[in-house]
Image (cartoon, one colour):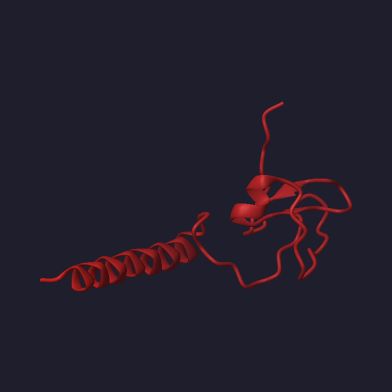
Length: 85
């Protein structure tokens, strides 16, 4: 087996692992998943906009919102995030 074949196999294995992570994350609703639905704030019920403006590094990396009405931080699935004080 030459080097190009080994790299090709490694690339395909990595791609397959990534696809499995995204599918599992979407089903389990964890940070690896993709949420295509609009979310609403669990505290005040305001629907978050379609364009997301991240307010933290975690929101930029993994998705999430900050409610413009009450300031509650949400993950990409619309669940409240508790921050340590």
